[in-house]
Length: 171
Image (tube, rainbow, N blue to C red; front, side, top):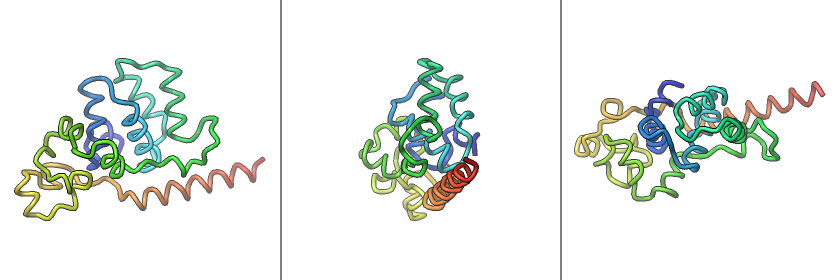
């Protein structure tokens, strides 16, 4: 899952666009940094320090204190009043809110350029005929989602609450 994330092949267009931009340009907008960070830590359940290390190796504007603090924030492990399950960004909703025409996604994920706007946020929902017409067969030309968003969010919330309960019991 970590390799799929670093290579921009998670099956979630906005996550993949951000990670491909990072590889290509050594930079990405802060909103996308937050999204890909919460996706790694909350949806995939991967330790934030792996993401922090990857970013420091790839970013041309990498700053250790800033990078470390941002990763702690998205992973909900730093000094922060928000519980871990509150900061779980949905890549589908973020695409619809921040890239409604798909300009950013289409630039960094060329295999999605011909996907109709109505299916761009969730290309796996395209009927087979639409996939063929768009030249983007899911599972062949573009990956299937690596995780079910709803199940991953629920698991992240449950795991976070269990960790809090264990920490409280030790205190």
